[in-house]
Length: 416
Image 1 (cartoon, one colour):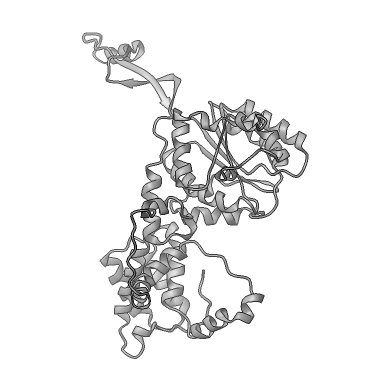
Image 2 (image 1 turned 180 degrees about the vertical axis):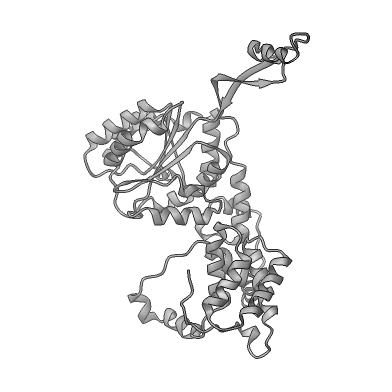
C-alpha cells in the first residue's frame, strides 16, 4: 500500500514533543523483525542516516527511505506496508476509528478484508499491550484443565488466516512435518551410486579410457526415484473458499519441497495459480492467488471447469503417473451427465484421484446430492479436508498408508 503523496508525516505518541526520531526508528525496526523481516543493526543505522539526509518533509519520501533500507526481499513488501501504516499512523486516526466503530456506519459500510501480513504486524506491534490489558481487565480464574483440549489440539483446528505471528510460526513447523515422506516412485532411468547394486558398463569403460585401460575400476548404478507430479484442483466457490484457503497454506509447503506441483482454482472458470504459489511467504502467496482469480467466493460449475481442464491441461500436467487432488463439496447444479463424463476422463488420465470433501467433517454425511453420487464412482479415495488432522491423514494416505476408511464405495451402498 503506497502512502498518499503530500500527506504530512505524524510521529507516534512516543515521539511527540521529545524529538526522539532515532529511537522510534529503532522501535519500528524491532517490530519489523518480530513480524518476520530479516533486519540487522547495520540496516537500522542506515535507516537513521537516510532519514537524517532527506529530512522530515513528505510522507512518501520518509516511506521510501525506510523501504530502501529495511525491505530486502519481495515477500516482505506486504508486511512492511502494513507495519508502516500502523506505526507511522496519520493525524486523523482517532476520528477514523470513531467512524469505524459507529453502529450507524457499520451497517452501511462493508468490512474491509484482511491484508497479507496484517495479523502478524498487529501482533508484533500491539501483542504485549493486549496481554497487559487482558491481565488487568480479566479476573484470575482457576480452571481444571484435566478434561480440556490442549493448545496443540486447538491449533490443529484453527484457521490459518486467523493465526497470530506465534501461532503461524508454530503452524509452519507443524506443516513442515507433514511433507510427503515416502511417495517417490521408481523410474526406468538410472543414477550413479557408490553402492554395489548393478555394474554400469558404460561408465566403467569411460572411466577406464581416461587411464588408457591400465586401471579398470567398476562403476555402479541404481534406479532413479522421483516424486510423481501432484496436480491440485481446488474449488473456490462461496461454500468452499475458507477450506481452500487453509489448504493453500499446506500446498505452499509442498511446493517448496517438491518440483512438479501444479495448482488450479476453479469456480465458474478455471485459473492456473502455479506461478503465484511459488512465493516464499505463504500469506503473500495466498493473497496473490486471490487477486489472480476473478470469481473467488462466487458460484461453481464443476462439470464445465473439469471439461476445460481435460481439454487444455491434462496432457501437459498429468503425465508420468500424476496424482490428482480434487477439493470440492460436489454440489453441482448443472448437467450431471457432463460431470460424470468429465470425472471419468480425469480418472483415466491420472494414476490416482483423491477427492477431498469438507462435508465429511459431519458424522452423518450421506451421498444424497446428485453431483456427489455422480462423482463417487470415478474417485479412488474420499477424504476430509478441514484442519491439520485431516492434512496429516492425507499425507499418510499419499505415502501408501491409507485404509478402508477412505473407500468411496461405502457411500454408494444403500443405507440399512
